[in-house]
Length: 446
Ligand code: SF4
Ligand code: SF4
Image (cartoon, rainbow, N blue to C red; front, side, top):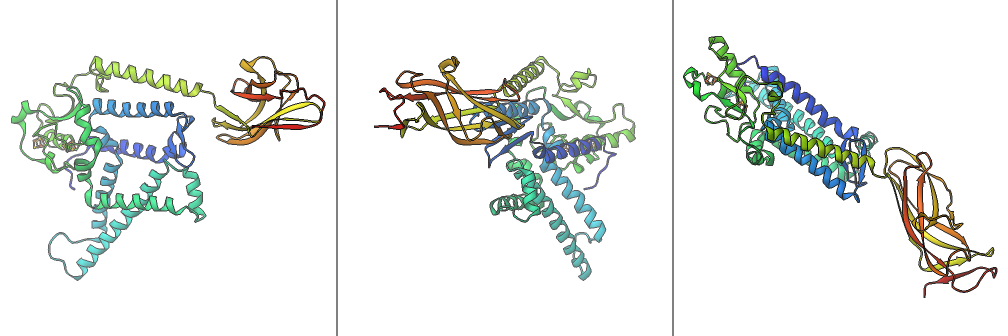
């Protein structure tokens, strides 16, 4: 596609596209925003949320959706033209297409002779192969948001990547390849839900690309703005055409033409905050904060995000559950003690390894009843994100508690950070008859 302009916005757009693409590629490697499906963990900033912390997941998803809506309300379709991977792929396609045509000296449209056909075929094989390689990378990157990318890379190196993962990556790659080879801008105008919903999010101050209809007499009808538009539209018809991705190429085109003619203002097309946006603006207005509504929404978003981060950071990273073995209510040992057995599950939800001590106490954390926790190891190491499921015995002298069920508390405490702990209620069964010092026995549930 030939360009008329020195491309001021286009150059800025390249920088933004490069940075946003890099961010999208490296985000899953940083575990900043990633849903790990095999382990059902959601990585958000420096925290890892577990699927049973659904309320936090819900609040995070709400924040992400809210930011998308606010961004669309303030900046219009700047995401589409300046950051969207679909646009980046389209532009990479056009760039490679042009390069390949020049390198291979592919003849233009019209009847082709023997060598021309070979060049034409080589051009399409090169383009299709390069785009497929890129599509496979896109597939890998997308799957990396749901499966540990380091693990996948290791498995790829060892040629042991699972067939399901390979199938999903290749499936995505094929869809991307068909899209970028044959669909491209049509995806934006006919399929993309974000583009379709755009009209719902906007208001009268949303950023648009506007043709100055009041200066229509200055237009020399060169149509450079139409020729350079990647979506093939004429922005002079209306600033609200759904095809417009707010890329700014038509602004560059018109600027290049009119600056040569030395008109009073060097362009008829410009970015504008709604139809009334003027050229003289304070710095915060240039950023899109042109009314109280936008300031209010910004304040609300910042408060919401801070509270959410505070709640996530402040939650207890240890979790503990215990359930008694009720096939046998209690066991009595030769030395006159009683023990109950429990199945326990302890999780370390932090991003650092820990050593955990398990203790018991009376109900409501009352002083200990001389109860002793028996585990194969206590305290024991618990790696980051580890879930340990094991059995445990709780011992008490025979007459320490009243006969029958007694409510106790079990506590897991980090030995490195004692303020980190998790507590759960358990029931301890004592024998109902006087059995002190009378050999071992058990009591099964009747
Ligand atoms: S580039 Fe500017 S001068 Fe040329 S047709 Fe478009 S609006 Fe008119
Ligand atoms: S009308 Fe202008 S801003 Fe909109 S897509 Fe075309 S070139 Fe980009």
